[in-house]
Image (cartoon, rainbow, N blue to C red):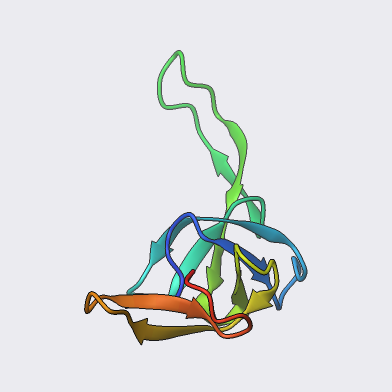
Length: 103
């Protein structure tokens, strides 16, 4: 189980986009990479595939290693580490290490 999931709000801690906050668009668990909205923008040169689909330079998000981001807690608003806890209904839930609330 990953500590970060799709649609979580994360803060980038290292790299060229250090300090940016964005939503996780997708996760690649095999390579331990994730894609954050508006961060690590790369340009791809594409050729025309059909008459109605033009070619050109397309900007899109590139992958970021999971170790370079921290989750932003929705309750306290701080970027923090994530822990796991088993609640009273025997479910494994993620908790914020700063405030102790469920993420």
